[in-house]
Length: 434
Image 1 (spheres, rainbow, N blue to C red):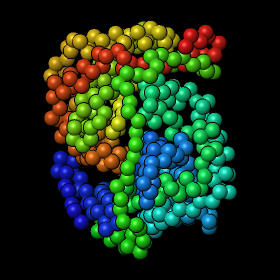
Image 2 (cartoon, rainbow, N blue to C red):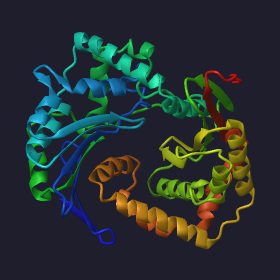
Image 3 (cartoon, rainbow, N blue to C red):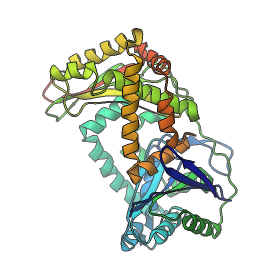
């Protein structure tokens, strides 16, 4: 068992790659009574075209299938897995994102028993055509529910504006039409390809003995048979640099208009340390220019153009990345214009000094260190970093070593207005001009 001590953070991480390819990470936390365990596969909604395990030709599966599969994993022939977790004092859940699917539980008792339940139910699929058909109605209702949520429509509408080909533009749950084509055979094909232990990470954090837990997991896995690991071949379409749509407006039943201003990143085919430094540089740039301590924020707040719903951030995964700035607003056009002018101003005339950078990086480090008090945050973020060949615990030294030139260079890409898009939601009673 490998042991890595992060002296600055006073954290010790234990790791072992098992013979079946499963990577197990354990982070004991002193003073915690709760343990949080995630079992995550590097498989999300964007993985719609791939070569199935044991086959030679690529397939394209229906949109929303990763999320559909997540739902179905909890249903077994002998009953619902949630009940089993509950009986052992655990709270269980799962989520699907663009790039991963995670199954998890938290508990203060029966940690080993609950870990066994987690490993066993994820590694024992059970699908029938009858249960798949039943699930279509349940997920269809979920899709309809999200279609009625303005903030969800705003977020995905902005992504749809940005991307012409990349499947990140497709809602994680798919559409009622796309899920209607899902079969039990599809689910088994996706499961067998992406749920192999070599494509998964088990992460345990909290009140746990690392040696005892590692031995328990190894024993559990040794009793199961898995095919030899194979490299998963995934296909993503070539994506253009410019956005697909410059602007759209949607009318919905809202009291106040909403706006998101998106900027599409072109530097997306990077991983590891390069990705970590680029993502942090972009996040710092957005914080400097659009954060709540910025001159921009003060100006638009005093003009009544934003409220507490305001947000500004940059996020990325391998293959795509974007900044989003926006808020509920009394004037979508004025706010949009103000964001655009501010981007153009700093993309061509960078006026920040070293002291500004130090102030923001210190603030980000403070937020990060506070977040490490949340075992949920650690578990969910660690796996995301791991799947991008990054390490969550490298964030602080990376921020400390970040140079102003890196931040400035990263933000200069924003000067290309072909990468800008605007998505507006206005009250139904107003005129729709998009």
